[in-house]
Image (cartoon, rainbow, N blue to C red; front, side, top):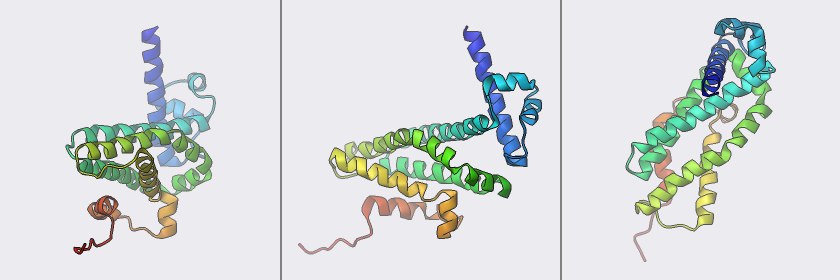
Length: 205
């Protein structure tokens, strides 16, 4: 039973990796189930056993990207000793992932927009996971006396604002707001602004 599960996992992983390459190379519309099966070295019947349609493979590719993103953040953040650095790693990793998306072929970018609802639903599915991740960084900062103590409600709100702000850097929003592609160089300023705000503290009582 274990061997069968491992074999299934290997085949699914191979299909997802093959589909990702082909989608980026030819676009979603032009890539066929037969193309993916040939790339993996399997018959179409094997492919249909695991994925009933090409759209389900597309969803699996996107979900795999999201999963890899969170894993990368968790690994990188675990090596940092301050909450500020953990938040910086979170921002950088997420924004760098976005930058890779911006470098996709134009045809695939357009097709991703065509499936915006599918992608939205997948990101919504993983929203709580991302909120929990950010909340952990904030609580760590409070316990480490980097951040001032806040109520549970305020921490929850702040988590949502941070995640929502970063989602504002996603492809369609970047094009609408004309955000420069080298925004990552402003990461320290952005982190400092979130932590300290932009107000000037008065020295008077």
